[in-house]
Image (cartoon, rainbow, N blue to C red; front, side):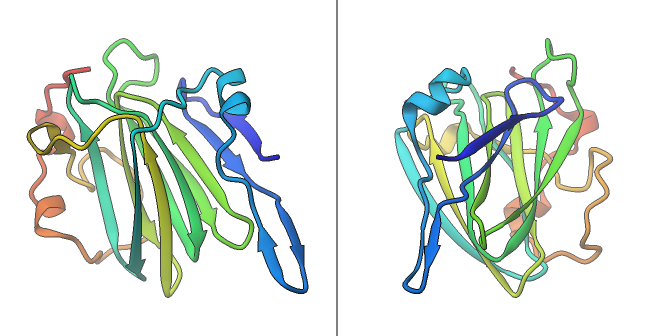
Length: 179
């Protein structure tokens, strides 16, 4: 069974899957609805994605605007990343604050990101593979983001490899949160 630890941002949890390892390799459970539900987390997942990125890549900070917002369960399956969550919920005591988790695939580790938070990561290893379970269907018109370097987080990469989309997201200071 995996372990769940809460954080100082409401609804954000870190997860670790100790799993089993033997001479054949390893086996890990990454989703158990009763365990997540007991922790108050939404398990009504609608889509699953997988990304592979190389060292120096920063992806983020992504979210979907209402009414297509979603919670995410993100697992690092291989490699290592610094995973970052930014609270965009106006009523949250941690609004505008970011929290980071070091995720690695040797013993799969992950994060649960509630609706109303932006998500991104920086790849620390030669390559990293992440698995995302999300609670809503992707709606391109609702796809949004905050510029990765605009909210005071000290990223571990100074010259990241970015997509054009991530390079041109609005900065946090001018962002009008719909959450």
